[in-house]
Image 1 (cartoon, helix red, strand yellow):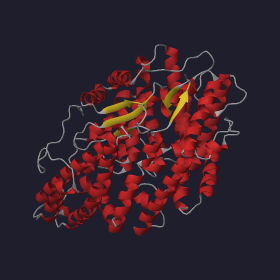
Image 2 (cartoon, one colour):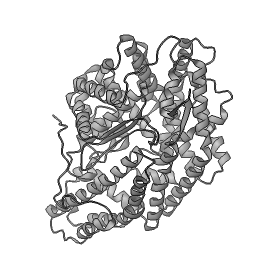
Image 3 (tube, one colour):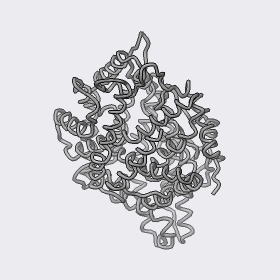
Length: 572
């Protein structure tokens, strides 16, 4: 197939062009019409689905833009109010209609005339939504949606002073790459102390969210929020027990490699003891990698890099640049983190990140570019629901792009030695990220299996889990006060609960994609494009299979993939 980035915003055939969503009444009539419309044939049912899809895309894009604008400037109260208004006043009124429309669809006598293979995953999701819907949960879900955004407002204000200059915590991270060990330790402790200053506010916020989420799950008939969330997220193809298997495999198959990587790093630095502020440092006399100067430089170099891989990939970023769908530089008042925001009507998504001229920012950029390519490839699918792909596949798109692009990073670096350092940094991260993924996921399981825990129990169990997946090669002596609350830096716990194991599952898929790429680049990229073009129209194992990879996180598969990465790392 020959995909194109020359996509245009979907034209309305059901809604009036120029419709603006200011209040519920701007869209209420369309919900009523869809609910009351008589459907007399399978063709009319498909037209009804297309009209519903158009309405869903319009509403989704409006909500996404509210979030984008708010995260780009957490200090603007009007933007915050616009976001809150949607989730407190509009979204709660949509939910009962959505449930009635779902029931109307499943009750249609023409349902069986639809292509059952084409609509399988969509109808499975509709049935799931009906099973979960409870009217009494609507206000709780609205409250949770607004409350969880408080995390970004708190974290976005965090800055520290270094040599008389103010830095966001993301910007300050560059000092941890310097060869001045005293400076590294000082900045590390300043960052940790700044986070600690808000530990009570974040603890209280998290407690409120845990209790709200637990009530939502209970009212939907679940024993705990974890079990509720697995259903809500459409995790039809694996269970909590499979996650525990993944945790165990990380402990046994990955941790020895992590220990080896950090032991080697300690030796390279010539240190007797490796401390947390040493993990990103280079040996004395070696300048930190600075692959770009600012967000604009990062974008232009990324476009060139993606062009070399496949011109279509570069065109995706060009289109986003043309539309001004990127906000890349870190600054005070901007929410932390990074994301690719799919825009259901526009097709070209929005990339948000906090670049501070570090090596990790290059990785984040090509990661989000992979998500963006996925958005472009899924956009031509007929229904909005078809474009809602599983997160485990979404992260294959992004993590594979990190690995695919490595051979084309030379425009970011002036020397072959810096290229090798960058690749080594990337491949070490591919391995060392697994313990943190297992830690965050295991912590979430514990939190929601024990929703009535005390603050002390939360701290103790976090440390228990954290220590299980911490390398013995790093000395954390005296840092327990910081480590006790280090979970608070993970925004997923606050904003997108249970979204984290996907990174681990997808990293395995991405390594499989890269292994193919090493053997046959052209066919691997074709499979990648093919798999992403399916959106959410196939089951998760089928999406992996279409991309030429296995949906498998057994000990044996993880051991095999880790060995492949280790061999590539050793060859540098």
